[in-house]
Length: 313
Length: 298
Image 1 (cartoon, each protein chain N blue to C red):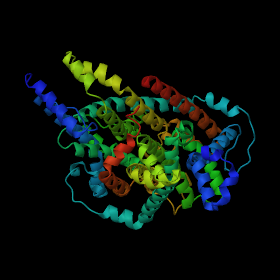
Image 2: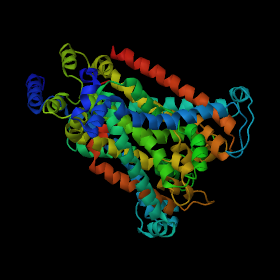
Image 3: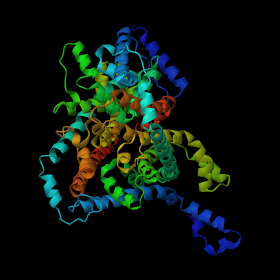
Image 4: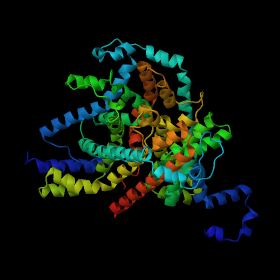
């Protein structure tokens, strides 16, 4: 800053053009460095969001290039009174996210505690836990489709061994949603494990030791010392997982296809909006759904980040 | 047992003091019952995560007749026929190339704009600006796809590589910025200041000192960006053409027919999963540190 305050007339004497550019670049490096990434994201987001907002006020449908009429808030009225597809999709989105997240947290915590203290073969267990996480979600969906196939799937063979009759799993109207939740749990619990394990490893030993000396049981120490100390990490895990769970698409589309199956049994907001856009080309309505979906996600993130700040205090 | 306890605690903390604060200071549990319980629990956990993948692999080596036969669950005569079908007839190798090229190019381009951005956002605490980039992670991809599709098809870019690479950068960039920001946050400023004293400019110090020192963080970010781009399905589903399909889309197209060729489908799934798992095996510590970036600091 002090350099910039000098009279500019003195600069050109010895300095060549390169030096001048370099000085300017150094001076403005804060924005020079950040700008390309920010512009890239802003252009790819701001314009589409604006357009989606505009489309949600029109009756655009058919081809992307088709003429459309401005119809005000009609789409919003239609969507918000649609108890046939929209509200069930909202409900499924929240059920999917809440159930998957809860189970992932409980299971993830249990597994993280198992892995917490050193043991032989630790590295291999970690690798095993990492594999579902990196496996391609579409391939994972296909894999579980075969395992859950009502006629030839391993899941029903297994049930046969213990004398339970075959279940429809993914193909049942009421069993499909629990089944995809199960698959999501299989794939993403490792993520929670890894995050919680990192948090556990960075915890200080002293409070736990103190409580042990005071005679606290293992459960008391876990409940009143480990969990509160781990709370910031737990919130991060919830934050990261809920962003992804709310938006789950590949798994649902790979296992059930268009419309979340013939009864829309796994149709979440994301799958519904995708279908409206690209399977039925109903752009006006789909944009409306997307704007509402976007507001929901922002609201959830807002609540979670506030909670996170409270925990940090 | 109870008499030995204080000594064990001390031994544990001594070891921890020797090996540094970052390693685990927890002493192992002592009771045999717990050890047995934990061994059993770990085996169950590992089996639960691995078995389905093994199942997929086994099915890819079976004929469709064997897949239907419950008695041939584990004992069967393996065949490579499915792989021959998938790799030979379905143009699969070109999809492998597409996936690789799109993931690679989008990762490299995201690094080029992401590294300086992460550095600047970390050093100057530009939290609001960082939020702009992280929006890309929060926003549902579908809400961008219709406008993108419209614009890019007007520019005759849909079906080409460039649009796929751009859309996958959208996945890679926020990851890279997020991971590297927490990496730079924990990097001491002193080295850079020393370089400044030695006469380097700010940008020179960044290029010659900070950048080489952040190779670990860059590796972590690139590996994760590559994996997420490789696995991405939705963008390629809409924006790819017949020649530029990526592997996840190619697999999905497998099931468009009335009866599913399960053996072929599983072989195709193995083909898409194997490269990414091999990468994961060799780079697991980077993946773990990337996924936990920022988690422990709260």
